[in-house]
Length: 169
Length: 348
Image (tube, rainbow over the protein chains, first blue to last red):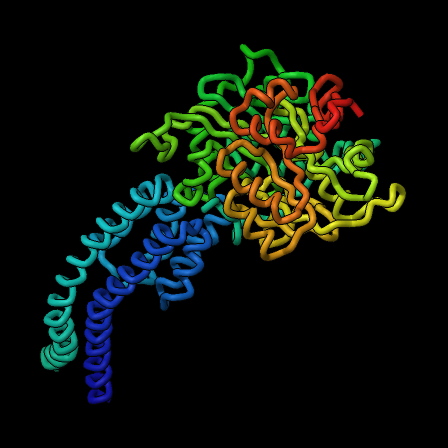
């Protein structure tokens, strides 16, 4: 019985560590996917003059979850008659729980919504380009940081489980 | 490229009248539905005002005018009505004063939050909504090397409601047909708001379907709908009935579209709205050599005035047009002042 309890405790702490490590590894992946989505959006705006609901629909089809859900909701909100900036803000609030991104990432992504669709294509391009540049920096930093941190958390979970077991015994 | 609504806009109910006017469209229920549909293009304040308008039947309305700092105005054929916050008709002093946010919000809804997609239209000072309703826009023009780049600080919007009045053209069509059954090259002229586009739409339908009573056979009509007003195309389907034998080239500049439609659809008649650009005239003269018949409109209140317009004068002086139809608002929009035979100068 005691052995069973120890194994359960170590497995529980280990899984928690692995889950945290997975979240850390996902962040640069999600940032990369976001960059790709913004590049697609930029192309649709600048080269296609595609209205935003249609552009969001195209981006949605070419991205994976959770960004797919994000752009699907944006499209839905615009079709309901929301403005692009309020739809962007509201979608971030409702969708951020499906992502592994940090608050600082959302702050930069939130900047896309400011003035989205309100100016000519040249201005839109400049705005999207600026956000893409900032996100690229964040993605690179997140990549370096995640390698170290993810490894640490995956070991730390099991080790802390063992430590707790030893203390209790 | 002009703004095209492909995903997010539901088809607008249209206003179709026949002469005499159908009673079904004048009922209060229909008017409420049409007002509610129109309200979706505006922000909360104006939307609720339009949804509550009871005193003005929708079918009488020609324009909705929004000017920053000025009272919200609805224009019918003979009256300017000022609307208060509750949607009632009132004096200009008590009417709702339009705010800049109302215009920004309306423009955002009309462009689906995609002003960049309407850039080309805005350069020309208008937007076309699904269903063919046109919105005139004024503001501060941004100029680069003498060319308008865009409009900023939008100060006024004029939403002009498109009408389909069927049967009006039947009165004049016999005058536009030669003895051999060929359609005459025809120019419709009038000042703004006199019903040129509405009459043109009806003539296109009549020519396309034919009129057995006067032995007019249906003819293939190619429509150059540069501003999307004539057919009100929505996902490739016209909102308005332009006849069985009509092909519509939507959103394409007239000058480049004329050659394209002649080669691709082999029309017998080419119809277009608002001839006024030098390039349109050059393309029209070129199209004439292909044997097609021309039906078009232009802004001018009389033949004399048309002759003074640099773009129209060469066409009239060279005797390109055989018939001239002059419209006015003397007895309401669509009043036909006269049909002229330009070869003889007679009034028909």
